[in-house]
Length: 234
Length: 288
Ligand SMILES: Nc1ncnc2c1ncn2[C@@H]1O[C@H](COP(=O)(O)OP(=O)(O)OP(=O)(O)O)[C@@H](O)[C@H]1O
Ligand SMILES: [Mg+2]
Image 1 (tube, rainbow over the protein chains, first blue to last red):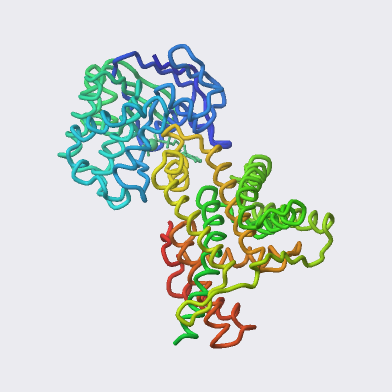
Image 2 (tube, chains in turn orange, yellow):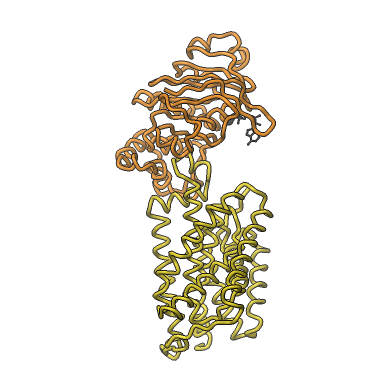
C-alpha cells in the first residue's frame, strides 16, 4: 500500500536518512522504533510531503508522491497525527475535529466520524467547547488522534502517540490504536516505547542514525537480542 | 458631559474604521508572520479607486465599497502570489524591505499618474450631521461606521463558522499542522492577503468623504494600523477590533481635552505605556 524505497534525506548538510526501505501493507500495523534523533519523524514528514527528499521514492498504491503537494497527500487518504500533537491551541475541541475533516470528500461523514471519535474518547465528548491549548497532554493526544480519524484515513501515520503520557494512558492509547486498526485503518506508527508498540505490531523496523538495521514481525523483534539490549535494557 | 459623550461617540465612529484597517493587518500577520508595511498604501489605493469611480462615473463612495473591496482583494492576492510568497521563509528584515518597497512603488506610481495634488471628494453629505440628544453625529462617519460594523460582523462569521475561515485560523495557529489537515496553506495565504488588502481598501473608501486624498496618505495609516495591531496583540482579530476603537476614542478625547495637535502623541504614550506592562498586547499570547 505504502512503499518507501532508497529514501535519502538531509537537513542542509546533515544527512538524516540513508537508503531507507520500508513497506506498509493494507490492514497492517507497522512500527518504526528508534532512539531520539534516529530520523523517525523525518520519515513521516517525507511521506506527508512537509519536506522534500534528496533521492528515493515514496509510492502510495502505485502513485509516486514526489510531485504531490502535502494537502493532496491528505486527500489521498494518508493522514498524519504529528509529534507533540500540534493541536490548534485557540480552537475548541469541536473546531479541531472539524479541521480534521477539512478535505471536501470527508465532510459528508463529519457527524458520523465525530460520533465515532466521541465513542472512542468519551473524555472529548465532555469537553467539546474547551480550547485545545488548555487541555492536558493526554487529552490533547486523544484529540490529535480523533482529529486524524475525522479525515477518513486509509493509512494513519502516528508519531510517538505515547510520549509524555502516564503509564495507564499509554496502555490505553495502544489499545485504541489496535482498535482503530481492527476497524479497518492501516497504521504506520513511530515509537520509542518499544515494548508496547512491538506488541501490537504486525511488522516493525529498527532505525539507527537514519538507517534501517533490522526488520521483521513485531513479536520476533521483541525476542531479538539486539533489540533487547539496545531498547529494552535486558 | 455632553462634550465628553460627543467625543467618545466620534471616537468610536472613527475607531470602527481604524479597526477595519487593523484587522486586515493582523490577519495578514497571523497567517504569514509578515508585517505588511504596504498596508497604508493599499488603503491609499482604495481611496484613489473610490475617487476615480466617484469623479468619472459618479458612483457614491459608500456604494463604491462593492468595487473597491474586490479590486483591492485581487490586487492583494496578486501581490501575495508574485512577491510575498517568495519571502515567507526569509529573514524578517528582508520581508520588511519587500513590503516597504511595494508600498513605495504603489505610492509613487499613483503620484506619477495623478500628481501629488490633494484631492477632496465632496459629496452632498460630506459635512452634514444630525443631532441626537444634544450630540451631533456626522452622517458620513455614521454610515461609514455602520458599513464597517456589517463587514466586521460578516468577517467574524466567515472566520468562525465556515470551513475556509476556520482553515485560515488553523493556518495562522500552526502552519504545518494545517497542511496535515489537507489545507492548502499557500492558497490560504493568498486568501488572507487578499482579505487584508480588501479591508484596507474598503477603509480607504469609507474615509474618502472626510479625508484628503494624496499619494503619501498611506504612511500615517500604516503606522496607525501597526499600533492598533500591537496594542490588540499581534494576530488577534478581536484585539485589532478593540485596538481600533481604543485608538479612535483616545485620539478624539485627547483632541478635545489636551490639544488637537497632540492627539497622536497621546496615542503613542498610551501605546508605549501598555507595552511596558503587557508586551504581548491586550489579547496577545506570549509566544515562545
Ligand atoms: N528542522 C531541522 N533542521 C535541522 N536538523 C533537524 C531538523 N529536524 C530534525 N533534525 C535533525 O534530524 C535528525 C532526525 O530527527 P527526527 O526528528 O527525525 O528524529 P526522531 O527519530 O523523530 O527523534 P525523536 O524520537 O526525538 O522524536 C536529528 O539529528 C535532528 O536533530
Ligand atoms: Mg520524532
